[in-house]
Image (tube, rainbow, N blue to C red; front, side):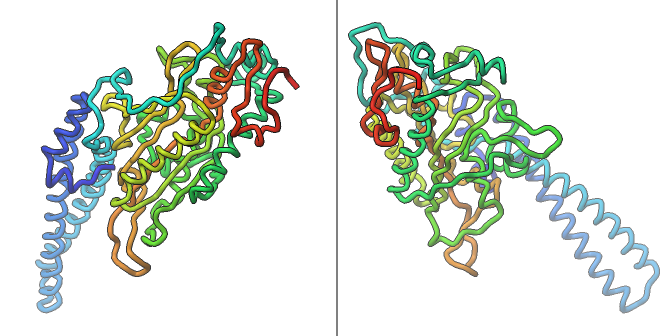
Length: 421
């Protein structure tokens, strides 16, 4: 949620920042928030004046026992109640308006209308074949390790059975990524796989995100779309002592998402599916450290892929593709067998946007005054489904087998996939 003081003190700067997103509707949301905030402050002033007047009359009544004053006090009390109710309703509308305004973009976010205008920051590695490469779905199906047809029979499109060495590869990737992060001071976390609506609204804009989430009928619960969400919410309404920061967490969990077949998106095999496993970096830190941490998280995820030997590129996500929560976002895209780069992970600095919604603040020490809201950052260390796609396609051999990256061989217990078992 955006800081209301920014809107009060520098409304034109906020307006110019929103213009970079190329969405005129956002400017109307800003105007609405400004009007509601002005109304809210006026109501507070009026209510305080009425309460002061009532206190003065109450003192007079005590001294003079005047019946007329008693009637006036009753009228003022009724007016105060009415104002309080109006203020409560305006508070709710103001908060909703502020939550609908996206985060303030960092100056380094490039302008652009969609993902075609994301800016490539660097390229890592290349892939060359002396044969016609196959896509991962054909490779895994031929090896007897992926069964989409039977999964569709059981659960519908977008689900899959992993078998044999591919199932072991999934588990190996999770442990490989976790070990890499533990060496960097991250604490492994297995979060709840469901969340209530209130904390979820603190993490994401449900108006934008609810259509991709699974909701549990009859319960106030949603299946998590990523472990970032329950890790962010775990400190909801808390004040953190500064010496605890940064808090570095490595979430490992299944992730559940309804939307898969978006127009123009790659949908073959296990690239875009309804559930997958992921290891996620998540950090709570001070505002002073968040941009340094953002680059550190990016370095971590790139190093994990580099050590696996996966060819990838990093892009700075443009204003038309960034979404509402992040102030800046990097995507990592890996090279697929069809010659196209597609996303394997993302890295977002959400500054204080999530923490403000969730009420997560920090102070110097126990008993000290609150200094402000923490900053939150999240980064995909490794989404195993897409990492498996990368390995199957980039490490495929002319005979249909697939080499296992050296860094993974000790975790897998094998160095090649060439038959189902």
